[in-house]
Length: 315
Image 1: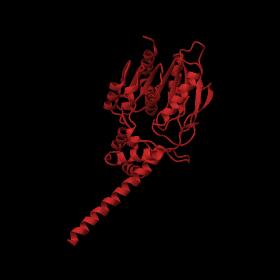
Image 2: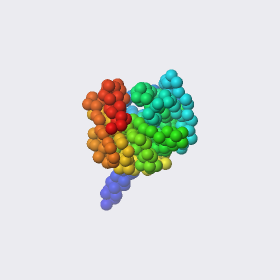
Image 3: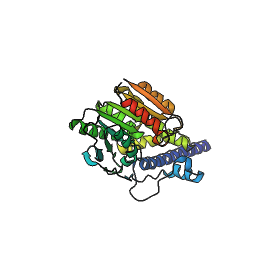
Image 4: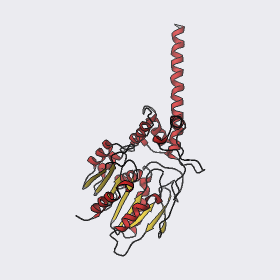
């Protein structure tokens, strides 16, 4: 009887220690994933470029994410500082008096507004003003925190309201990855009425995009993916397991162009199809066969520009 009790105690202690260790690792992973570091460190390479040892180290200690900085500036621009949930920094590129409207550009995770300058240039060629935005934690904006589109949604609203107050009536929203998610949540939460939105590779849910990163590392998703999402939300004061763009899509009624790379390992085609199904109003889905989770202009500039132009041209 005493032997059985000892075995039970050992099992309980083992499970308890394992539970504590898993949560400790997940807690630090979540913090490093949602907080950029300001000191100079090398950014962790993409999973497919890591060797076995580096993958193990990354799984144990998390990624290194230096705070994104703007690497170049447009030839001409006006700096716009706005107070949202954080102070955010924007560049306004004003076109001609005959401009068709204004497109607001929102970058992806660990990006910044200078990474969107090539796309801004294409919108300028189509005779649109452009507003490029640094989300909180990036570029010239305040803080070092990111919530993968959750709190950034308020910053989408702030920039939209800024242009509305300026008298702009033809406002389009463009986002890539996290920027797309922020747009979708902003429309769902604040009932924004843009002329249309262009969203590239939005993930289906916070949990799904976290699982995708584990799969790329050839690591099991259960239970660590769920723990990481839970602690990420806890640290940043929101329910991350409820961060679900697939549901946000149900409240989107404006014209939508959804873009996706068929080789994307971070976002599955199933997630894209579910989002597309839930979108209301006029919608189009365009895919690029050999593109991954990347800037589509690198491989499909001509096709991307054609798709954008057709979407923006009145039918």
